[in-house]
Length: 428
Image (spheres, rainbow, N blue to C red):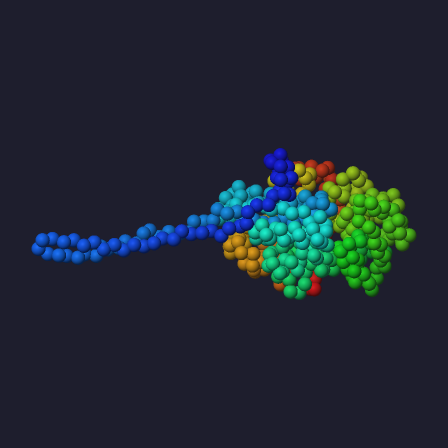
């Protein structure tokens, strides 16, 4: 299975297939025939009864249902590969079960490269390919850039870790968040945790791009007048970033916790340096845990805490993760993969209910809520596409052992710190 998966990963990046065709039904023509019978004595004209041909039903379409994957395979690669594999797994399982009313799902993949121009170009290519929906967006830069295009072209589009407020407007109807809520919703739980722990000074290191700026603004808004002092440092995005001066600034400030939530690419580096320069807990950036823990080993144990939209403690997550690890080259199923699996699941349900029209699919999504495998909350949306019932879990890494079969990356696992109450949806 993993060999086939590897081939799919490399081939799918350049796959550009035919447009989705409408099913065509054949026409039936009814013929009425008159017969005349003549005898020597009598001439009788009899009109033969016309028998209508058997009713015919338009054959079910055999064309594939195309779903687009737009994600940062260059840039946020660990996040992107997770969400891509989750989407591919869902498609394979649906196809193995007979597809959507007999139609197979075909995944079409574009790399958004954490770049707004590449993101828009990739989005338009997917639309040209005839996809009914697009999912997997990680970068806030990309999310903000494609949002007006999704609205103009009326294609349902799913954000996974693109938390910038700019990705949604009050008029958005085709953009849907699935995992990471809007930045203002993420700062609140951090303040609540700090207050519950009696912390008086919290430092934050944010990235110099859209998500980092959005999270910095959220920190300022949330922590001002809260009784908890805060200091924010803005750092460049790796690979050429030395986080030493930023972590030293946290030590000079006297931070009792470092918030790396605004710097996803730098989480691992910040955790490692903080153990040497300023030994305090680090709050992560909704990152794949295996990415951050990786080579940090004991440095992360008992110190690294992070949020997730996946419920790592649920039976449904355990079942899904077992299947995922048998399918994917990844060694852990992050919440990005859980979100990717859920995106394809929801789109397939919508297509089965209302057909392959993107506008009808968007309407179905808005009108329904979804209980998805492995999720920490019910999936539903506000009118403008914000998560209506977001309930992230907040976990601390422990030494394990991990539940059998759920972590090929190591023995570490999680302690549950809190499963939040539903967050108030951010309204742009």
